[in-house]
Length: 249
View 1 (cartoon, rainbow, N blue to C red):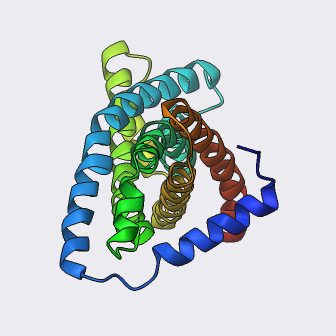
View 2 (tube, rainbow, N blue to C red):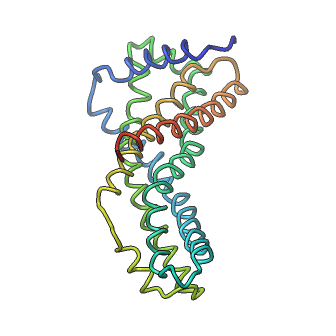
View 3 (cartoon, rainbow, N blue to C red):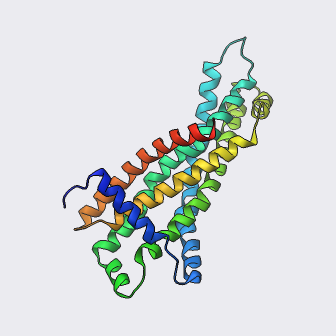
């Protein structure tokens, strides 16, 4: 299969999204599928998110304690710095990159397998809008659920930092809590959630696109999964820069 240039790929992606967001035939079926996708793509990602967040929160606290070890810098700034790192970048951008690897490859391989085994062709023959039926529930599920994963990551990461302060004694845990309260703005959380919703859409839609147009054999499905992760990660980083400029200015 010849390689598509960027403009052609964007055009095919846009046309696919038009099919995806066309009016669903039966809303009850879509509701059931959305619930299933929330479990498959959202709930099953909680464990990975928790493990990574608790260790990152602990590592950030430890690193900040070492870096800010100065009599002129109050200790509560360690808690403040940990909170800012978790809320503004890690729990949205970095978690999204991790989910792009887990969820994105899963979506691309699932839809790609359906494509090469002609299951998608069978849906089209039966008069079903295969793009909407297969992709729309995944997009709705991730856009709705991934922001909750971001909130969960923030809480677990901050708790991991507190645990590190408590266990190692690198700082007074009460000063860590004071740092968490220092100059706290709720708008920062909304900023992270908005970013995560955009990331969820791009992860799901790009991965679905890569799988939907897979051709050939199982080897091509593997290549589609790899492409989905790489392209999603690049788009996430670009989107992060754009949204940061738009929202934070």
